[in-house]
Image (cartoon, rainbow, N blue to C red; front, side, top):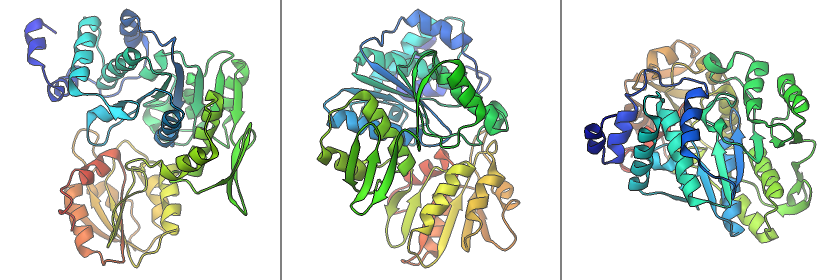
Length: 419
């Protein structure tokens, strides 16, 4: 980029618009290009415990609980995650707070200068900028969430002290393969020779187990080395230590278990009361998020079969008169199998399209819904959501799901628009 053009990019929004145009592909897996730029950056994470988190689902909630535990323990903590819901700055947080726009602009300017003629995708560029911002802060703990897969994801250029694999299920098959064995191999790419790992997947594919053996990884497994159990006094954590009388978590219990295993690995000195606080206080936007009551509106970014299955189980636990489902998905997702867990409900469906080259259409969703379902279709998520809330009785439940983009469109509405 020439200096004249560089001088015109003075705001975060201008940079993001530029990044969307500089690479012909939205996703291009591989580490060669991004590693060249990373090496030029000469970043130092030696003073931080670096934890890398991969998995089909559960990465964000696992990281959120570990982040909160670090803060309760008086540790400094930085988190890199993706995608964001509303504000790009959500992707990098230090001690629970976003950085200001100018810091992002400065990081992008540096990466642009260092990359020279090396082409980077939007995600790769943002990942390098995020790593630069975190390295600048030198936090005690750095949590790095893998964007897609593991082995060839840009985040994987960093050397982790601990690798965490949450779950393994079908998602991003165009890039990762169409079986759990193939996807398991890609996730295993974040493991290191004789490294430390926490495996949250309770039915690990052979490809993952083989990589653990080949690399001589010291791995702890959920269900075998750590788990939560229910007893008369509440939830009981069984790991290297035992913690009884814990309240229910606001995130999936399997993800909370992964977080507790990481907390043990970090050797965070938390009191029993702090563990109780951790279980009851951690919530993540867009994950079974209750937006309003009367009618109840719940938002969830579920976009693959495993996550929609969890969402369906959550709906089973809720009291409502009538169910309204608002859905829009990206066309490269496993839409048919993602819809199956929710088709058992007697619900009113509101299908919508998503903008952009990856956006799916309402018509595409309609073709996969059973003829017995009641379906209304709209061009946009906002229109579908408004109609669902308008049609809902105060005792009804409206659930919005299908993508980060879907949830983001509702979150960006004026609070009164849905009423």
